[in-house]
Amino acid sequence: MNAIHYRITPASLHAHVFEVVLTIEQPDPAGQVLSLPTWIPGSYMIREFARNIVRIRAESGGRPVELVKQDKQTWRAAPCRAALVLTYEVYAWDLSVRCAHLDQLHGFFNGTQVFLRVHGAESLPHFVDIRPPLQNLPFPWRVATTLPEASDLPGAAPRYGFGLYRAADYDELIDHPVEMGTFKLIQFEAGGVLHEMAITGTLAGAQVDWQRLSEDLQRICNWQIQLFGVAPFERFLFLTFAVGEGYGGLEHRASTALICSRYDLPALAAPGMNDAYLGFLGLCSHEYFHAWNIKRIKPAAFTPYDLSQENYTRLLWAFEGITSYYDDLALLKSGVIGVEDYLKLLSKTCTQVWRGNGRFKQSVAESSFDAWIKYYRQDENAPNAIVSYYTKGALVALALDLKLRTASAGRVSLDDVMRELWCRHGQTGQGVAEDGILAAAEAVSGLKLGRFLQDATEGTDDLPLAQLLKPMGVDFDLSAAKAPVSLGIKTSADGQDCKISQVLEGGPAQQAGMAAGDILIALDGIRVTASNLDKLLARYRPGTPAVAHLFRRDELLVMGLDLSAPPLDQVKLTSQKRLSQKTKALRQGWLGD
Ligand code: ZN
Image (cartoon, rainbow, N blue to C red; front, top):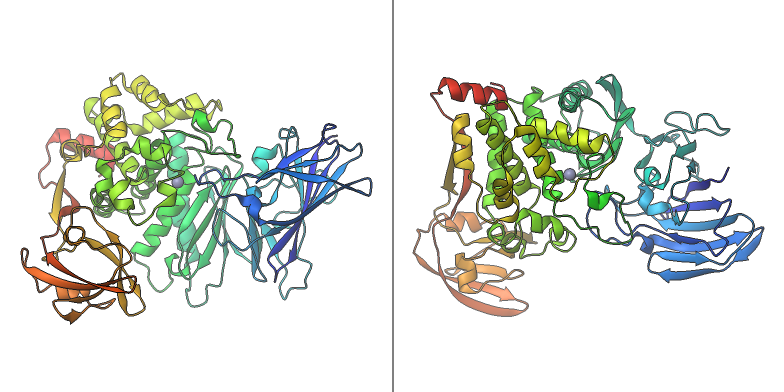
């Protein structure tokens, strides 16, 4: 049978190199074209993974075959009659969930980093022989991946083992990241399906409460499976890399790759909930929700993905925003947190949106479309120029949920829209058209929602959350930060120095002429350091003139400052004390209390 066969070996742990041998039984007689993706689904930025291929050669029937580079990510092999064999080395030293990493402690890769696409053969079965490291190791390594084992073939990998794996096509091949090393494994069942978490990284001193972690995850997964009515995978794997400082995740069809701090994991010594653990559960919940919303309910623009260039959609607000809304909501609905904690999380999301003037310049639809050049490539001007389709997208989802609940007297909610999207798109594999969210929401509710969604997703006015939350028995209040005055900057420590990292639009610092990169050295003749700025500002009143000294490059600048009161940008959501019967019923449907 014609098939594509890869063998991947952690060839040099110290040089961080995977060696891949790719065999194509029946290469294109006109000259086989091969390429590596330039981006990875879920992370909308051109990353040019081909730059990590450090050496590549081709041969056929024992003779070298000429390889000609066509563009930055594409090669063409000279025509050959026998099987074509490519051998190449991939440098793997990017410790993120998007890339590949290899050292003497573990190996990790996404298929987009290491598996060349054989043009014209994408729909054939793809086999991968995952080999153990060539070096001797003090402890034997295991393999964690949801790539199916080629169980019926000689050399098949045992579960958690090295050996032969199989994917139905190239698209599946690159959607199962692989971890190898000495990870800790926890298991639980949800919706009748085996769920696992493989944790890599030394946890010494972190003393993790594994029992609690698996129980909390189980609740969250169960609730999400119930929401959609089905677990669309045969097993699910959380691949977690625990480090000192880190946070991030990337979704896949039956797994997710996560990076977190080891101190985000629940401690045996601290049984209560804390922000770090809550943040980790929120991350797990978020990536898990994507198994439905983006991995299967997909924009038409990603059906199929074109991994050679940017794929444009105005809908990331729906795929990342709705997912961000449900990631925290699932913590509440599954009983991991209570209503007051949930309202605190929602307040935080609102505050993140209300803090940036970029929200008046860019809609969430524009932010989705331009993710490639703006959201994923943020610079010092980001808060003034862009809006996040994650945070504001989550609030659009909240607004839509509340609108549906109120207008239908509690009969219809966003849950119904998600189930409709699942039936229309998740189960059929048909992509969501750019107006597909609106179509599904109108179909399940019978409401006319065009104007509402148009304003929310294409407009730049603040969402009418105060008005939408009121019938739910929740008050929306805006207040200012506690400090008496604000400079309108964000700072970072540069050794002992206080370095300005962002200058917020319209604030006193921008009016005075301060810029990102400036070192703020004194305020009214008193030295400013990385740690004392808040203490100094606490003594001022709004309207007090002040003099600031700064270095820009090596030049001393002196500026007059007109300090002002902090802006009203902190959102607080609180439950109303007395609730009518109608409010109680609506709120019960939404918050379950
Ligand atoms: Zn996401």
